[in-house]
Picture 1 (cartoon, rainbow, N blue to C red):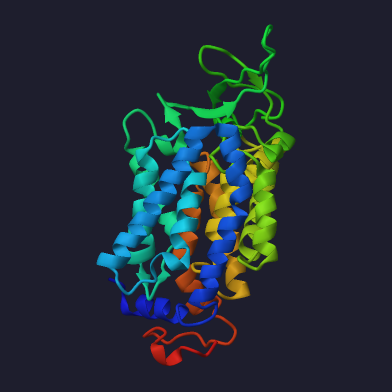
Picture 2: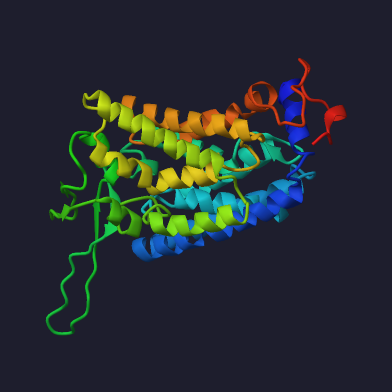
Length: 375
C-alpha cells in the first residue's frame, strides 16, 4: 500500500513517544474539551443538530467495531478513542441542517480509510476526521442542488441561526423563537470583501428580511450562522484551554497558523485591491470552523511533525495556504485542503526539513526498525 520509505516512517512513529496509550489518553481529553462547543451547538441549533452528532458518533463506533472484528483484526479497536474524537469532530464541522446521510458517509469513510486503511501499526498517515471531511466535500461539490457540507441551497448559503428579535406573546407572554437562515459572516466577507461585516448586512429567511451585524463580540459569544461546533468562539476557547493545559496537543502549530493568517491578511489589506480590509480580519480568525481545524486537526499529535521546528514550519504553511485559498479561490475557507496538504508533508519535515533532535536524518532507504527506540 505504501512505498517502503513511507511505510518505515509510519512504523517508526508508532514506536516512539508519545506511545499508543498516551495518544489514546490525549484523544479522550480532546473529546472532553469539545463538550462546551457541543452543548452550545445543540442549544443554539436545536434537536436536529444533536441528532446529527449522535448519528455521527454511532456510525463511527459501528464502523470501528466491524472493521476491528472482521477486517483489520490487528487494530486497537474502539479502545484508542479514535472513533469518539473523529465522530464528534466531523459532527461539529458540519452544518446543523445537514442531511442525515452526510454524517453516515463521513464517519464511515473517516474510520475505514483514515484510521484503518491509511495507517501502519495503528499510526495514521492523515488525521481520520480530515479524511472524512475531504470526502464529504468532494461528494458535496458534485451534489445536485448545492453543496450540503457548505449549507448551499439553490446556489446560496442557507446556514440556520436562532432569531434574536423575539417578542413575547400578548396573552401567554411566552417567548416564540423561530429559526432564520442566511450566510455565515465568512460567506459575507467572501461575497463582498470591501464591505465591513460589522457594519450591517442583510440576512433573512422564510419570506422576511432581518438586519444583522456580525462584529467580533457576537462571533465570540455565539448565535451566528456557523457549523454545529463553530457558533461560539468562547465555547471553543474554553475547551482549547483544557486541551493545551493538559498537553493533549501542542499550541505551536495553531498559534503560528493564526499569527501567519493575521500577518498575511494585513499584508493583503495594506497592498490594497479588493482582497481584504482590516475590519474583516477578525471574521477570518474567529470563525469556529477555522479554530476547530487549526487546534484539533492541524495540531493532532499523531499527524503533526514531531520536532518543534517542524511544527513551526507546519503552522506557517497552514496559515499561509489558508489565506491564499480564501483570497484567490472561490472558497470562503479551505481548512480541509490546507491542513490535508501540510499533514501530507509531515513525512518530509520529519525526515529532511526538521528531523527530531535526537534522530539523525534518515538514509535514502528511509527509517527502518533498527532505528526505533532512539527517541
